[in-house]
Every structure is written in structure tokens, then in C-alpha cells.
Length: 533
Image 1 (cartoon, helix red, strand yellow):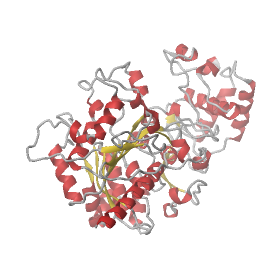
Image 2: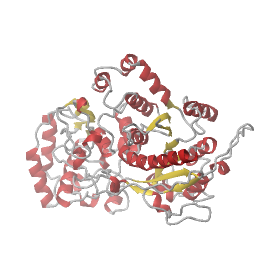
Image 3: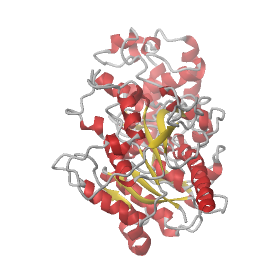
Image 4: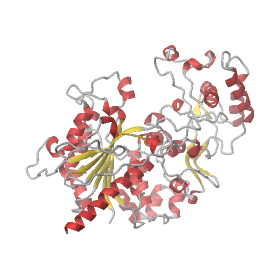
């Protein structure tokens, strides 16, 4: 039987997708999501749809699913055509807010509801897996900098203590293994009482001793034996007198670009193994860096949309030519100007304009991990539509992408010709390299992307496409490919929400590699249990 998974703070399901996609030596899915919990309504819709997709065996997803992603069928009609699978998906994916939500939150769920649901779906199974990433905004270095917050306060920001919901489930239900993900900024976060990460490590090592229920249940005994916390990328430096593996805190940071993910995403990921499971896990393999050209280079070309004028190719291409007609480039590097002029001459009308939620395109190829990304039944590409940009930003995008091609790095504001500088109040601070000097950042073809974060939903300036003839920021599908979501993974909701979902997710292909390590633990556990039977 597949190993059951409870996935909390699930987002659109990136972590769960990696585990669900892992095939064991018997050519069967090694893991099965028993329950996933996510509070955001639109992310939950994505989560439910993907759960529906997984109700079918590999290769046997019905054509109706593809009709839905192509816009030929509503999700209501899709689920009506396949009621049994839809019911299973809706039972698996739960829209609920954990912790101490606002009293107006319609998705709030109580601890009792969560415990009842977990027990029901596990049906007595003792050896299962808990995964999830408690909300990380409170710990983010950029977020703390913007809030000018050096010391975190759990009383004023409930997100600081949301990991305790993870801790509570460990204490009450005692899974054999857990995987918990968070931002690297958690290593430096502090409250007035402690260093946050040290406190979290101590709590996760002894959930039953650390968890203090708000309303203790006299009938509920916490028998969790505790956990040994392992790194997924560094072998233990030793073991203490109690058998706990010894690490430096930075040993828990996974640098995704070293493990086949085409972005420099650095995250803290903890692997907990219950103390009565005497197994030391392995680690994931190191690979060469994957440039973004390998994952987005073959995507259909698009042009940026126009936000302030009538949107047409003629208007757009005329606008781009304006950048070399006047004095906008006065003071710019002559090599950059020459490349801009050359790139403008290469501009041609994209076959698909500024894109759409579904584009019918024959032969969408990808060189990197084609079996992971590809799906020939799609007959096109999903969620691939460019944003609309202001005229002045399109000029900047052309400059920045040409700069990246010539110099091999993204420019700072001090590299801009004066006439192309944005009319921001703090632009001089940026020129002086004091505040957001790289606010216009181009990704580079021959390198891994910078981290795809939820911020991409608000600001495309940090995610400029490297092709100067397209003059735009990345699309949802390009961001999803960089995050290693399969091409048939459809993101629900408006584009802003789609970006947010993609940016918040764990890269599924990274989760797939973690699943390999976790599967090894359960395989050894099965062998040990059989020997003792």
C-alpha cells in the first residue's frame, strides 16, 4: 500500500506533487496524499484539481481533463462527468485555516476537526508522513527589512508561531517521518525570548514536551517519543550522547540550483525521523546547475501587452523603436546601444501575440527532464500569457535584457542612462547602491534563475525575460517551469493568484528527490518490521 501523507499549509501542492510522482521499485506510486490542508481558496482549487488528476492511473487521465485546461469544459462539468474521482479529490483537499485565525475567517477549522479528519483518513496506520511549510512571511529577510522589524513578536504577528500547528500534529499523531520547509531567513529570525530556529529545532525534537494545548484534553495522552532531525544535503557530523545527529544550522539549507532546479532557491528543509525508527537517512544528490534556457528556451514567443495605449503589434513595435529615436539612450554604453539596435531589427510579430491561458501549439519540446515536464496530450501550453507594461517600462526591459546579453549580469540603477531611470522617490538611493539598486532584474539564459517568490505576483521588474525581442516579464508557465511544475499542472484563479501560488510552492522536482530519501526510510522500516514479526 502507498505510504499515507498528511500535507498541511499545502499551497497549490508542490511538495505533495513531488512525493505523489515518486514511483517505487514495484513500478507503483510509493506515496498517496491522504489529506492536504490549505487556507487560500484559489490555491485550494488548484490543489483539488490536481488531486482529481491523480485519482487516475498514470497515462489514464480522461480527455475531459484536457478539455477543461483548454477552456472547452468548466470545472463543474468536469467533476460532474467523473463524480467518484471528484468526490475523492474534494475529500482529500481541504480548505481550512489552521492555528488561531481571525474570527471572520470562514475557512477556520478547530484542532478537534483536524484531529478527527486525520484519524479518519489514516484509519489506524502508524507509519505515515507529515509534510508542509508553515507560512514564512514572518521570517523572510526581505519582509523583515521592509517592515523594519529586527525582533519578531508572536503577539502582534500570529505567523511567527504557526509552526506550532505543525508541532501539535506531531505531538498528537506521531508520524514516523516528517518533512518541514521554510525560508532561509528563519536562521536569523529572533524574538525577544529566543533565536527562532534553535527554538523550533528543540520543539520538533520533543513535540510532546514542547506542545502546550490551550485547552488540555484529559482523555488525550501525548505519547510521541520525539524526533531526530536530519539534513537532506549534509551527513551528520556526529551524534551526541542521546543519539541526536549533530549539525551546523546552515547544514539544513538546501540550495536548489545544486539539485537540478533551475533557480537559486535556498530554503531550510528539515527531515524528522521518529526516535523509535533506528534508521539514518541518506541525502539527495548534487548535480550541475541547470540554466533557464533549458526549461523556457523553447516556449512560444510572446510580446508584452500595453497598459496605457491600444494593444496591437504595430503600436508595440513602434513603441520599442522610439527608444533609439530620441535621447533616451544618451550616456548608455555604446555596446549596449548597438545590441539594442540589432535586436530591434530582429523583432517580428509573435504568432501568439501576448499569449493566453491556453495556447494550442504543436510540438512543445523541452530538453531538460522531458519525461518530468512533458505531456503530449496537451497539444499546447497552459497559463502562458504576458503582462501588460507601461511604455517606459518596456523601454527599460529592452535595455536591461540587452545589457544582460552583453555584460553577462543584470544592471543596477547606476548602469542606466539617465532618461531611462524610473520616476521613483528613492531612485537616488538606488543609484548610490543603498536601496533596491537591482529593482529591474533580467534573468540570464546561461544561468539558473533568481528565486521565484510570491513577490512575482506583484512586480514583474524582478523577473524580466532574457529575450530582448519580447520585452516582457516572465509568464506564469515560465515561472512554473523554473519551479519544475509539470506542464499539465493547471493553476486556478486570476493571473495574480496563479503567480502567487507558483512563487509560494516547493519545487516539485526537488520534492521528488526528497521523496526518494524518505522512501528509503520506509523501505528499511518495512524490512525491520518484517524481521521482528
